[in-house]
Length: 188
Image (cartoon, rainbow, N blue to C red):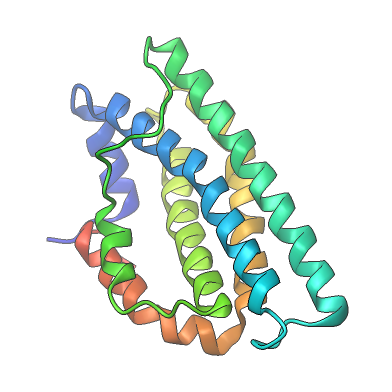
């Protein structure tokens, strides 16, 4: 049974406790993204020239990865604020295992460009969900206010990661992205 991101969000809003659970997972996702981007940057520095990232291109990579990492840290702070207003403690979840990423990681292309394509698809998935959150009339105003900025930045992150990854890496990762969406029962 597949559903749209809008249907998913409507379910979150209608079910007691789901909004709080979503905020906890969203905080985890934003805060841990900073570490994932750091690992991508380290790998790109170590093997980037062999994989076609060289010269002035590297400076673009470095600048974009830093900007996106800084944005993700800011997003974690924004979600933490929403959590604290609801009496929730912002923390990285030790037992969290994303169904989406579990599918993505099976036989994943671990090259720099492959990892960048995974990041692009993760941003696309978030972007789609955030668009649904903003479109739903019952979205709490504090969430709407925080996610207005986050949505704009997610659009940029997706475009930046997609351009850095390139068409070939995006095409190679597409099947895993679709499997991840199926695992969480969301339409592409």
